[in-house]
Length: 116
Image (cartoon, rainbow, N blue to C red; front, side, top):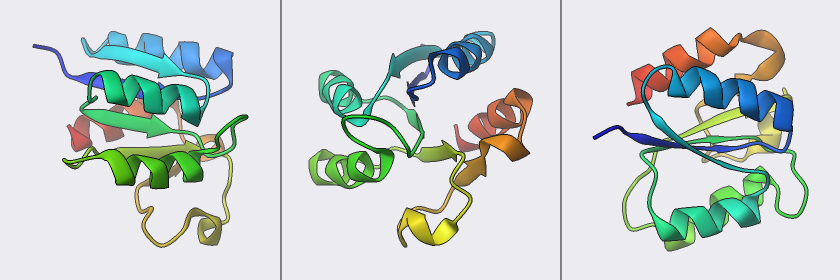
């Protein structure tokens, strides 16, 4: 069975490109435009990996991250994919970060491969 990746990204164009690239690797992909929407998806069925943007409307990525930690019973790898380059803004728990302007979609797919 294919692993499921949840993309949490409010930029619909970037979300679509990333979704297409990951589906090309034969993964199942779910998408959410903000943290609140993503929490509902996670509650319905746990993804194998989450790709998370930080700056989003309604519920930002950092708030989502800490809300997720409260409800999870098992670890889900989270890859932060953002334009925020100030690593101090992430918080001490957030480790796996890619800066969108510094990486290609192929780089993101390669990182996902290494995490799964």
